[in-house]
Image 1 (tube, helix red, strand yellow):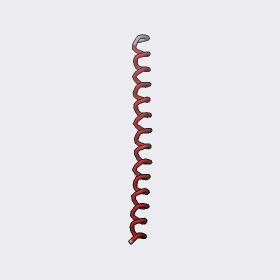
Image 2 (image 1 turned 60 degrees about the vertical axis):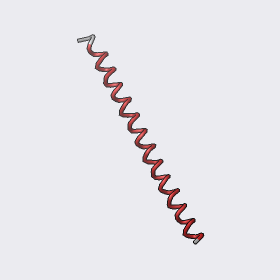
Image 3 (image 1 turned 90 degrees about the horizontal axis):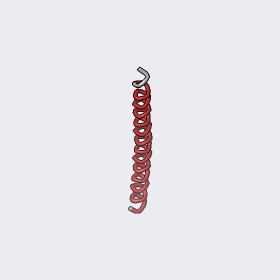
Length: 51
């Protein structure tokens, strides 16, 4: 029992770290796509102004 506990704690810590990493990556990806859309809209507006 005492031997299995540290392994379980390590497993929980590993899963927690993986979830945190996934959350950070998904947040960065959302920010990046929203920024990219803003840049795209900005470029479209500039093109409309030029024509």
